[in-house]
Every structure is written in structure tokens, then in C-alpha cells.
Length: 338
Length: 289
Image (cartoon, rainbow over all chains, first blue to last red; front, side, top):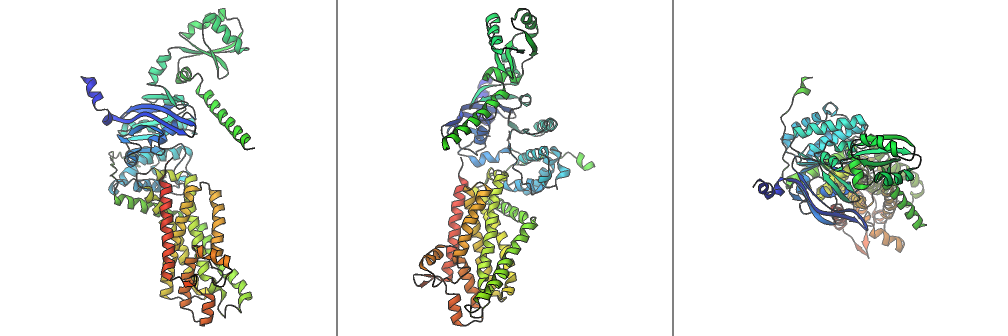
């Protein structure tokens, strides 16, 4: 019976609902049919290398880009047919700053309040509240152009919250920030979760940040290839990650396959593979492996490993490939114009 | 420091559904932002001051040594004045419109475009803002009219103010329409140079528009700026104490195949062009990828 009740009223409960969403740019398929359901109050992480289609997906959910196929509802409103309603119910923090550097922090927020039609009587209270939340109240009269990268990001988060959105979209909220600022941004986000009843949808390519999410989706080449809680995803691999450095990687991979029946790949410059109970496997490896091993490293599963087991490369390698693809495309383009 | 310790109750904001009042509020804030930006930019205010002075007094005084005989005793500065006014307004308006390109480059345009208001409100606010800033410039040139031999007279001041306000709006919508398509500042500036100078030179700001070679007559008649310069000149010349012969030679009025285009129609042309371009600009900005 309880099953029935929860499934009976899905749209009212869901903050974000996505069905077969697609986006093509000419021949290039940026997003290739994704499905998602995000419950109200959830912190949902979108994980993947640059160029995986995360930002395009967010842009579609925020009504900035029209989907080529499929449909999506945010806060119960359709992102194509009810753009204004969607916009009213979402807050946005983009990868690149969208603040007016010539204006003060306070003016930026007041401008936002006017654009979003926040009732005049509430603006002062809300302004104080969001600026306090991100620790910028004492800087409200400073021009935004004098702010550091971390302060700007905090101000943008505050601005995104001004109109009490039901869903807050954060596109790479910590990219380009130093580790200390990154962690302070995260503590603001966690505080925010407690202060406001809000759903957070964020993208990141920092694996450690994905750990803060209730659920994460791993996206690669326009598709969602895994979707679960961070714990469940890590448990789904079940294996420890072993990396060995040898003088001949190809021979080492062959030897691992022959003698232990293990499929290994080269990642981050080392022969990498997963085994159960890694600490017990190492003595056996040293005893029976035919090649000299220069160093060895065993690690419990991390989200990096999850990413690797689903995509066959680490997120850093995947990014290199994307960058390389971009350069290749540029070369081809220039070649073609010559 | 007790103030920072105060924990305000969570002010739960409910953003109201889209209303006309909400759209007006959006228009107003976009307009206000243009004014704040302009008033905090001292350098821009200074440059907007120097340019008309340069044209009016350096060019006007210098060239008058050549033209004394043909202006029938009228100072060349007085003749050039309407054109210089139009030019000053035009440059400022284009510069204001360029701010939309800056906004795009610095990302702020996105903040405005994702707001739950009509795109038309954003575009209208931007155009009105640009027009207001350009009008400041116009007022400045009206204020120095005395130095160019233009009498201070309520009719002149009000009519000239009205025409230049309209011109400021139309040129801003033109610039905003361009900015919808031209996404880089460098290209926008290049385009401005390419379009504004010919518009200015063809408009009759620097010469009477009768007895021109046929090709120049055609170009002059299709230049929208012509229909802003000519009424300003007529208003000014109405209040000058000059002989009818000089009047006809210096202020012949715009003709279409021998028919004198009435002032009201000229002003209407400027207004209608502005509205058409506003429509195009709104359509351009309402598109999504």
C-alpha cells in the first residue's frame, strides 16, 4: 500500500523530472537521451569530465537552451512550455560570473530582487539574511570588481537564493577556486541545506565533492552511465584499486591476464586494476609476478574508481582526451580552411 | 557587533506570478542600471563633453574662414549646430547600446535573460536607459547653443529636446538590435565605425541637402539621420534673423521628387524606424538556442 501512495503523486514530489532529454548541435549529440528523477530536498550531483554534456543539460533545465528531444519538468513546470514559471522557481549559479562588477554587492542583489519581483517589504530582510549566510554582509557596499573569486562565487550563491527558489542549480560552483575556498563554499552549501527547504542540483568534476551529494549521476559522452548514492556506487565496484609501476606496462598487463586472470588498464601512468581484498593480493603478486615491480599502491574504492569502472578511464584521463579531441578538431578545421 | 549575531527568521519569499507591474519593475531597474553605470563613469562623461566642442568650435571656426561668403553672414557654427547635436546624441546612444555587448562578455546579460520577466522588458529597459543617457548629452549640447549663435528660446529648447530624445531612442534601439547579433566588442565597435560615420556624413549635418549630385541626394534621402537633422535645423532657423535667400540656400528642407517633406512626417519617420527596430531587437533577444 505504501508503495502505491508514493508512486501515486510523483510530479508533486519531484523537484526535477527528466525523460529522454536530448540536445544536438548539428551532427554533434551533446546530450543523448537522459532520464532523471530528483526528489524535493535532495542534493544531486552531476559528475563527469568537461564536455560530457553536464552544462548543456543544466542549460536545458534552466530554460536557456531548448531541448532537441524528450521533456523535462522543474518544480513541476515544463521547461519548454512554462519557461517563466520554471525561472521563478529556480536559482542559478553559473560557471562564469554573471555579476555586475561596477555595482556594489548590495546593488547586485537589489537588482535581482527587482527583476524577480520580490515583494518590496521583504527585500531588506532577505538581503540581510542571504548576505549573512555567505558572510558578506560587511562587504555589501564594496564594488564587486574588488572581490576575490571565492567572494564572487559566494555572492552569486546568495543572489541565487534571494527569491527562495525551490531548486538551486550550481554549475561547477567551486571550479577555479583554491582548496580552502572550495571547502568554505561547501560549508555554506551545507548550512544552506539546513536553513532552507531547497533542492540542490550541482555539477562538478571534483570527485571528492560528489561525496557531499545524496545521489550522483555519472555522465560521459552525453549519457548517464551510473546513478546512485555515492556509497552504493562505491559498493557496486566492491574491489580495491591496485596500481603498479613497472618498466614494461604492456608485458605487465599480459602477465596479469595470464597468471591471475585480471583485466588491467593503464591509467594515470600506472597499470591499474581492481581486486577484492587488495592487501591479501599484494604478497601473492610479489611472489608470482614475472616482472620487476618498482612500486605498488592499494586504495579502497573511491568515486574515481567508480568513474573508471563505468567509463574505462579516470576522470583526469577523460579530460585529457576531451582536450585532445578539441585540439584535433581545431587542427582539422584549420586544415580544412587552408 | 551584536548585530551580526542576530539570526533573522527565514524570510520565505514567494515570487508572484508574472504581472504588468512586475514587467514595469523590471524595465525600471534595467533603465536605472544604465543611469547608475553612466553616472559612475566620469571619464565617459568627460569624453561625451569634449567631442561636440571639438566639432563645433574647432571645425566650425576653422572652416568658417573658407565659407564666409557662401553662408551669407551666418556663422558656420550655427549652421553646423543641428548636425553636431545629432552626432553627439548618436555617438552616445551607440555607446550605450554597446553596453549590452559588454554585459554579454562579462556574463551579466545572462542574469537578466534568465529572470522570470519578458525579454521585451529587458530590451525596452535597455533602450530607454540608453536613450536617457544620450539625452543628457543632448541637453549639454542644447545648453551650449548660445556659443554657436543659437538663441535661447523656449520653443527652440523644447522642440529640439523632443526631437533629440526621439533620435536618442531610435539610435539606441538600432544599436541594441545590432548587439543581439554582434557578440564581440571589437566587431561591434568596428561595425559602429562603419555605419555611424556614413550615416553622419550623408545626413546633411555638414551641408545643405539641395542641389546635391543625384547619387548623393538618393543616399541622403535614405539616411534616417537626415530626418532628425532637418527638423532641428528648421526649428533653429525659424528663430534666426537672416534674409530669406540665405534661409533657402542653407535650410532648403528635405524634398522627395520636388515635394517638401513636412516636419511632422520627418519626426514620424524617426519614431517609426525606432519602433520597428525595437520589435526586431525584442524578437532577436527572445530567441533561445
